[in-house]
Length: 485
Image 1 (cartoon, helix red, strand yellow):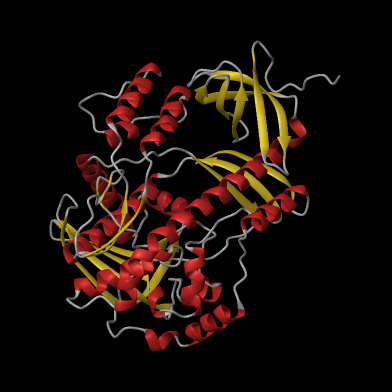
Image 2: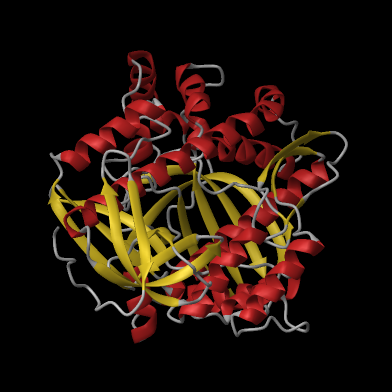
């Protein structure tokens, strides 16, 4: 659901320059070295030679992605099987296109992941692969790593296989489309099961103590040379779809732990001190966290439309810290749990967009079929955590800088106006606020309390530096311009 949208002027002005400067400052580019492009084109031209023998072309897979996505990593097929279900989850066979130690491999290690600034994505792999030859585009034969899960009536996994196969996606959906089909009762049976299985997996997530914030996302879009800033609450279909990916990541972790070689996505459990702090914060904001309710189940009760509960959701992010990658070969690491998932977990479903997934797929496929893990994959494992940490840091800096620049552009001509805002975090002398309209989060000076709805006057909106600053005012009329002088 789109809550707020603000369209800006054409993209060739001050904002476009600011976004270009951010790319330059961070040293990121969508361009690839000639050797990488040449290797990618050759791999794409020889794609059919890498297709595995196993034929699953008659299985009507489908994809669910954002409407503008071309780098389609995953396709699924869902069916009933007795009292339970069977889930087939096809993941793009990126390893077939990337020669270990080659030009594509080396470049991917410098990038780590696909980046998504508002003025165009910066892909992990050349687009001839990521948006064409390796992407699970509809009605195209592709190679894939196919996970097959048999589930019982409660959607617990009872059996897992992983094998390379030829697949063909028969339909491409975006989240809103799937949601409409399922809500209206017009979805094909193998699509309608997404809700059934997704909701069952959410129940299992609650049982194991997993958690999802479900906070409205702040997003930047671009269309016809115009940018927009959107605060969007995810539709239910996104959560159902995410549960399939989470199930796969948990299965990948289990395979690698059993085989005693691999790389996990880990996150430490919150400290007792941080949990105590969060309980006090939730109680102070009027929505106590009951002792008998699991953390994830409590978060799902919060309504982001309620200012005080929105402040609780932002405070909850303090418990989701310390995520990283843990490689191992032989002895298991001391920490194997991803605490937000509530189980051991690995990134295994987005090899077009994330470097580590390519290695996880290769390791898991070998272990699942009783073969030795390829030496090139095994020796790379300890190199991956620092690569991914650097890439995650870069992605965070890029996202923060781009959002700040767009927020400043949204508000540039409104300095002096007073807006309605919710205080989402407070500290001495100020804090952070979220405007009701437009969808902007910014610093604000004044005496503030989390969950408070205030009037805030815009003091600064500088596109070049991405600086947006407010000051709290009392008794001021809303959305009125301050007289000049």
